Amino acid sequence: MSAANDPYGVEGETVVPSGSGFAVIEGIADPLVDGFLAGRSANKKGYKIRRDSGSSQWIFVLSVAGCGMINEGGVVTPLPRGKAFLIPPHVPHEYGVAKDEPFWDQYWAHIADGLLDPITMDWSGATHKASICELPAEEVARAESDMSECYELTRSPAVNNHQFATVLLNSVIARCRHQATLERGKSDPRVETVKSLVAGSLTQANRVTDLARAVNISPSRLTQLFHQEMGMTPQDYVERERLARAARLLLQSDMTLAEVAQNTGFANEFYFSRRFKLYHGVSPGRFRKSRGATIR
Image (tube, rainbow, N blue to C red; front, top):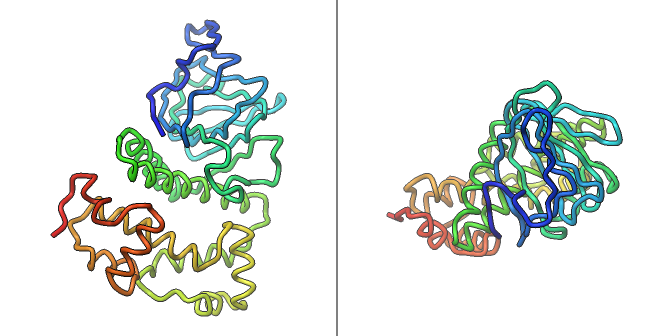
């Protein structure tokens, strides 16, 4: 995995000056991607990207300031803060700063096909067009923070940092997928309720039977709903959230491994360490040391 401030300075691009004096990049080549390439761009009026044959990669963009636009067959959708889109490989597309807007600030990622779970990348069941969602205000700040940390981690040479960056990117895209499902009116509110319950009680057992009882359905029905909407079982979701929080605590606090385990719902630090290494590909201690922190 690699990163760059500007992925568009690649050989083979055609740069056409626009009337505003800013670049309009057409027929642009794909950036080189090993896994995924992430970055942040603040572009001024007149800037747009157009690929008439699409890209060989998935393209994910989260708008964080100003206003962008995406043009799909002549239908232009504005992209203010909080809107995100995902373009499948080989889908023609055009996006950039919205007409009459002074700038557009966004996080982006070019993702190699097959890197992330196909269910996570399926926002609408359609592989021939872009999918768009608008995150709620409380989700935008979290997604922006995760994309910022993802980008910073990709700039590190440490392999385990890249693994955590992939986890963060996957989490953002999964949340967008869920929002896109909600906007299509096909999401079951019981899934959202369970997610909220889990977020506020990671130190609890969060057994499927208890979660299902909280929303008055059977465990098997809850498992089915979760797999349809999140691409994973409720048990997998709980563990993913625990391990994501554990990674943050390792990077942002001086808690011992036992304390991290206790604060994320694991029975003990030995079981926590086993699950963390299996998920993140590196032990908690090595993960923390790679970021310059010290374990008490």
